[in-house]
Image 1 (cartoon, rainbow, N blue to C red):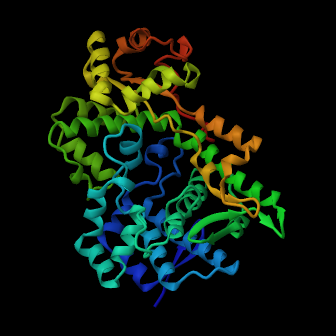
Image 2: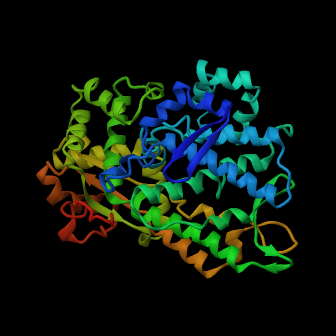
Image 3: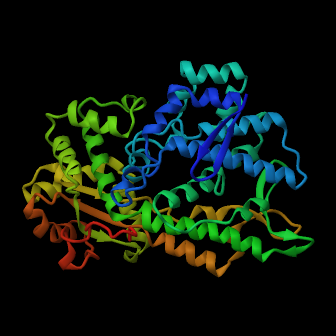
Length: 443
């Protein structure tokens, strides 16, 4: 018998008996304690939604995409629909507490999508693995989640519905994140009507009766606009970045004291922080970082660079301090701290990847009877502007402990000497006001 779950974003979501069995496993229930937006709740108090609700929403949206494909006269095989639904529900099962912070920002661990050990741990577990094995879907669901189509069992479009540039995952979190952050922006449901599947590939149809549909293009561009707005106001908010960097630094220090990646597999956000506070209470650096977080005494930005430094310098910084080749990031953090005569945990470098080019613009579309093309190849001025604005969100920070007074006054000049590039923070703001509590709208 199907089960109905009421969701604040999508309304009623229907679960099949198999989906309900998957949802009731400890591996999926753990997601109730992992926030979708990490530390964004420090800026937007309502951003407490979790990966559990997002998983339900992704399942629902995947179903809507398949319904619209079938409404266009394209048959979706029942076995593919069942497999896609389960994969959409389980797509985030491998997320760690503060996962994006640890995986994308400081690269402490591999991304959950690409971490074979993690997929094995969760999908081979006694409870969830047992449900999948009994259903006969274990192999195909695993292939769908890991992005590996093979032997015709998992068509490419199935993977694209679950994890692509514009997919069920994106269409749920755009709407869900905006809702819980109190932002009024959203996309129109009409966008679902443009999904098509042909020769095993998912794409957006931008022609009708031989004519180009400008209204369809407008709806897809609106998705890119919403994605950019959330990046600007939520995902890369400086308070979220600073607090996330502090948690990441504490985990990194824990790894040097016996903490293992596998230790995080059973943890939630709060239990990870509890482990850091208690198990490592005698480790000065971790203790300091946890005390600052608990008191919301977040580290301050003493040094800031943007893409204005040029692509070559930007690429060099990413190579050194994001990819962290040879442990360069920790070496420089320690060097700066040593010169300032402060503990090494008092300095944190934040350097995101350079590939902030609004990947959703690469979604496949059909604009004529010829082959499918990437949306970005249309050279639409608005798309180009959004892509460039998104690239400009890249920021290189050096954060410092506000309790170490000498850092506030001396760190900016020392960082400039270290990196050879003048800081883009006005001198009056360095280490002082850049991380003031945000106003109600989060800007």
